[in-house]
Structure formats: C-alpha cells, structure tokens
Length: 489
Image (cartoon, rainbow, N blue to C red; front, side, top):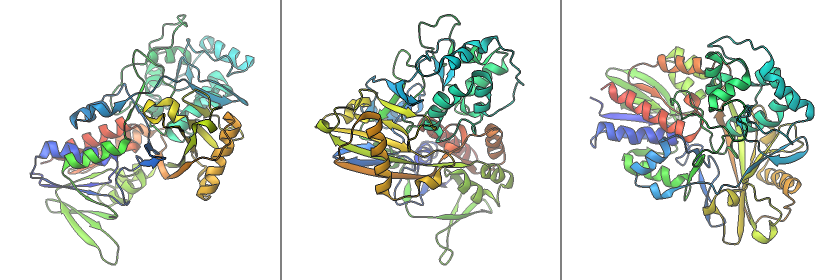
C-alpha cells in the first residue's frame, strides 16, 4: 500500500501529480512536494504589473485540449477561465509586418494557405508547385522539420513562418526540431501515404484540396503522448480558429490555479529543498536532500520526478541508467520575458493586433511581442496598456547574459521600431527562464519511450520534456505519473 509519495518539482506537472495522487490515495496518504526554488509554479509565474496579475511565463493554453478546463472545473474555478478577444496576430519578416497567414499547420502550408504579402513571387511559386513534385518518405521515420520544409517549399517558408512560430512554442529553431514530435499530425499523414507535404497538411487539418475559401479545421486533440500544445509564452499561435476559441487563460493568472492545486492536494510543500540523490531501499525509495554537509534522508513508497530533463537524468542515473541516458540527451533552451506597462496615451500607436512574431533574421533582439491588453480583455483598461516581449532562442543563451536594464532597453528599442511606442514604461518586470524549454529534436519520441520504459516500479516522470511543452500536456503527464505510481501499491 502506498502511504507516502514524494513529488520532486513544484511546477504545474508536479502539482497536477500531487492533486491526482490525493484523489487516488485518499486523505491519509502523505504527499511531499519538494521544490528547489523559493516558489511553486516552475515556468508558470504570476506577478503584479502595475496593479494587475500578469503571467510572465506561460500565458495561454490550447483550448481544444481538455486538461485545463477540466482541472479548473474540478477545483471550482470555472469562472476563472477566459478567452482571447479575437484580435488578429501578425508576423514580421523580410522587413515588413503583416497578418499571420491562416491555413497553415504550425507554418506548414495547406492548400488553403494565404501567403501573399509574406513570401516573394518566387517563394509563392515554389509553394504552389510543391504538390506536383515527387515525395520520398519512409513511414515511421523522423527528420529535421526545417530541412524538410526547405527541400519542399523553399527557404522563405522556413525562415519567415515556421521558424517564428516554433520559436514561440519551443524557443527553438526549425532547423533543429524533429518533425515527428513537433508536428505529429503531419508525420502521421505522411506515414499514411500523403503524396506531398501540402496534401499531408491538408489531411492533418481536414482541408479539402481546392476549397481555399476557408481556414483549415484542426483535428481533435490526440493522445497526450503526441499532441503538441502551444505554451504560452508562446506569444501568438499558428492554429486556425474553429468554431470556438483556440486559446484560453486564467483570470488572475496561473497563480490562481497553482495555489488551488496545493490546497486541494493537501501536500506538504517544501521550498528551497534540493534533492541530490534517489536511492533504492527495501520496500521503496530514499531521497537524499539538502547540502552535502548536512544531508537529510526522506524515505517514501514512491516518487514522481517532475523536473527538467537534466535533473531527471542525474537523479535516475543509479536507479534507471537507460532512462537517465535518454533524459540526458534532451537539450534545453533559455528565454526571457520582459513585461511592460505604458500609459494608454503613450501607446496610441500600438497596433490593434494580439501581437507579432519576429523572424530570426530580422535585426531585432525580440522573437515576439504579445499585445496583452489587446489580446485579453481582463488585462485591458485602467488607463494602462500592458504587453510582453519574448527574447531568446536555442543556442542564444549568451546573448541573454546581460543585466535587466539592458534587456528592457532591447525590448523597448524593438517595440519602438515595430510600433512607434517609444515612451518610458510606468512598470516593468524581467523574468529569466534559464533552461526553461526542452528541445524536441529528431528521435525525441524514441528518447521519451526509453525514459518511460526504463523506469523501475514506484518511480514515474512528468513534465514538458515528454509529450508536449504546453500547460495541458504537462498536466496530462503529471496525472499519468500519479496513476503509474499509485498503481504500484
């Protein structure tokens, strides 16, 4: 019988696991949440920005996945669920800012795509000719997404559309991300025999070729194991709007959800607690906590590791070496969110869009701006305009190693160039996410399978390194991890 469980990591995955464990194990079980930082939440963090609760990590979730609405309902927080205003997104590429094209699957064109104004005439011709070109595809295989896009559609699609979109989701580069983990529906359509990449995108989004008067309809969310969920610093999304809202958020910020999970789980949360070792013991597991000079042993029946991949690899090295090796192969990217608040009269030139994605070859430091007061009605009003800049892609960690004042200056300079807003902000907040986002490279699903298959009984893993970087996917992994360890009792 499982009487005591340790959850290592107090982010959304770990807290979702603790909450699910309480349901499965009942009121008498002891659940310890061990968090190295001085706060819960992981890459979810809500701050006060000029008097309003404002998320400076993930800010939205894919509404077509059920996990967040279901969890809010379970916690009695349904009224906290909000949706965007409908303001349109834009993209900055080739020195121009224009609407983010509809009719693509994470930047991969369907036959319904509207790419005028984004691509050159030559680029448009290359995209139009793609369905007629022979396609060689090995079912079950995996390739670098950027290489496939460049070979089939040319460089412009990769550089001006797919890279900005995926840079928003993963803080990654299209030339380093694997197709099968990042756009699984496209890989499945190719496996099923789609004759071209355009046809595969049509299949994945239920577009009927020739019916280009409407945006494509995305498939219902698939398994939590493969569905990619847009995470929400993820400034503006590439999913088409269908019948309802594409994105959702939490009124009052994700802190509302996090605090409710802690309360409902009844877990003992220990902050500033470093877990240094995971050891087998008879009938369970021992965690070694604290500094080497004054270690503490915590004996439990089961463990959920809801930590970044490098930390999981370190803790699993002795107990599950194969799983540890696979986790150690997952690389991380760092990013920064700069939140800014302006007097409304100083931001009249701000476009009415929900935000802008910035292509990597643009001469700017930012990769995206979210015009938060335009995108979310609950963040508007009060005579202030709030927005957030996102900086940092995979391989650019060194460029972020400057002080907060310099990051604010870079964000303000790019904001001025893009929108004409040059006034001094009335409030700012800089949030650094060192190693905050796992990179889903070629073979990522094989690595995840090796991690999960290599775990001993009584140990489970959860988090963004597995089946999606978005909040819904993280919640799903936390709940699945709880179910795995509870079943061992």
